[in-house]
Amino acid sequence: MASNPGMIHRFRALLADRQPVAKQLLFLGSVKWLENSVFDSHDLAALQKHRAAVTDEPVPLVAVSRSGIRSSGLQAAYGPDQLLTVWRKA
Image 1 (spheres, rainbow, N blue to C red):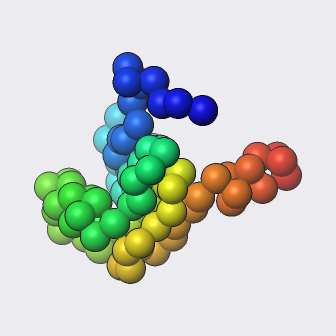
Image 2: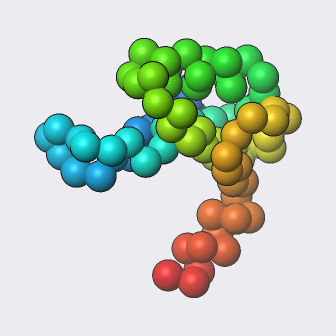
């Protein structure tokens, strides 16, 4: 399936305990849903930079990638198979 150039294929996510003002940040994540581009050390560095801009706390980093993960330093990493498994159990 070809990618639609108008679609968003990358974004950052922040999960907090409540809104509008969080007391606790639960994780900071990145979704990279590109057909031929894995989540790599450059993506991890960008995610770490975003975390530093948000907090000084060691908030866990999570990545979701369509094409795989080639980076260490994440507390969790998910691909299409893991997402489908969770969705099917829901």
